Length: 209
Image (cartoon, rainbow, N blue to C red; front, side):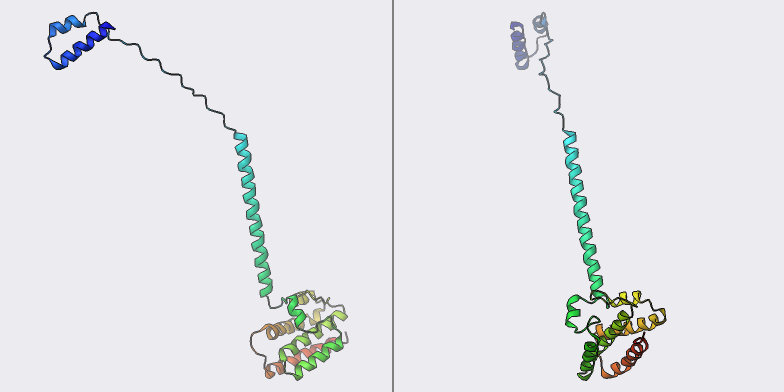
């Protein structure tokens, strides 16, 4: 300790006064310049183990939940798109429309003809064409050529018709019916007079089987 103090005093003197080499040589004799390295504290390098299995399960469940949500979203979108496409088809009649339309192929034949004559007298030509088509379906149903049902579309009837001889004519009348019944344009008397004979002739050709 005394030696170190002596060294410091000499160093201070060295900074403040000219250096006397002989005095400095005398002072440094017996002084030790090596100091013991300070002890370094022990570092705890042991890391806490991570629960890898727990995190893996959480990520797995999260991925499954995301996939299920995406699958539900896709299914809902596909159902909505399919329903929209069905509603946009000319031959796809909603149940409410079918109910409001009046007699159908499930109604008695006498009721269908009476409603047709009344629509024609009132110049409701669109309704008159619809009733003529329903009369055709009624005849084909009675003959077992197809099965009339309230939830069927006109396109389904054309695919179901088993009478190959009449299938082509029935398909043409179906398209004409859809054009008149579902079209936005007004149906004039001249339009009806051109369309009516085709329906009447087809009915006459099939009514006796």
